[in-house]
Amino acid sequence: MKTEILSLLRERENYVSGQELCNHFGVSRTAVWKVMNQLKEEGYEIEAVKNKGYKLLNQPDILSASEIAGRLHTKWAGRKLYCLEETGSTNTDAKRLLEEGKPHGTLVVADKQNSGKGRRGRSWSSPKGTSIYMSIGLKPSFHPDKAAMVTLVMALAVAEGIRKITGLEAFIKWPNDVVVNKKKVCGILTEMNAEMDYIHSVVIGTGINVNEMEFPEEIKETATSLFLEKGEKLTRAQLTAAVMECFERDYEIFLAQQDLRGLLEEYNGLLINRGKRVKVLDPKGEWEGCAKGINEKGELLVEDEEGKLVKVYAGEVSVRGLYGYV
Image 1 (cartoon, rainbow, N blue to C red):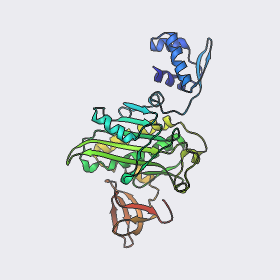
Image 2 (image 1 turned 60 degrees about the vertical axis):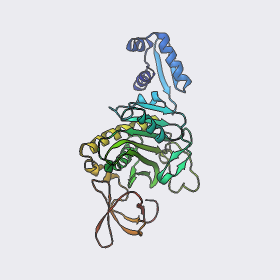
Image 3 (image 1 turned 90 degrees about the vertical axis):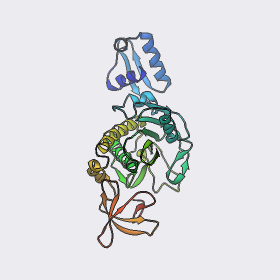
Image 4 (image 1 turned 180 degrees about the horizontal axis):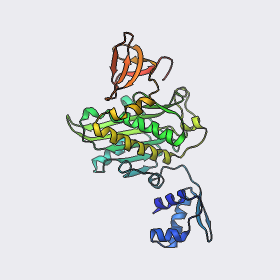
């Protein structure tokens, strides 16, 4: 009931009467009053006026189940939702929940991570109250060799969600970094539990820099936050819901053909290096070329010095701009 009451308060510009809430939920005025007190304790500023009702004046930036679920308009993505104040890794939590039988689309969101995971086993501790740390668990039926493409699907969803909520021009640095003003605001890590020809689960972990006000010296030239770029604090729950809605739509487009052909125009339209010269960092030797976009498998097509179109596969190979991160 708390989630539904929050949704009603957000939707109304004016007051919602206590009697209307009682009739809508079939509860007593005392029950409504208790929910309002719970919301106030959580940091919501609610005005109560006799003969008028309740009005939401201000709301905190919290990642609670009520706050996210009340904004979520999906069929399956995030409908099973776990919100944690602190955890080691949301990827680890999501994998465990899927093993316990929780459904496809289960979402774990944390306010703070102590053992976040990065590429090649890197880990980091994440600050509290500033970013979005979330992992969605999937139980796909496609072949394991197609799983890597869902990382690009999530990158597209994050960029679309950021654009929708903030109006900022978010782009993608292939394959799955989301950037604003040529600096990274999001990292994505996908982990799979599979056999040779069968996937047990896929977990996509996403970390978005939302309200950070500063970054350590060693990364401030390449990292930024949505707050630093927009100049105002953002509601993380709203962005979380928007990304889930974009992901559900994009994932279903991907699933229909089990490749990225249905998303090529959208993804390539946001690819920040498209049409620009890049450096391909291959263990076999670095080389330069012009990025042309991705193909239906998510490979980056790069035209080399001889005019040959080379397919670059994400993994050990990475791509950088000639004069910096992008």
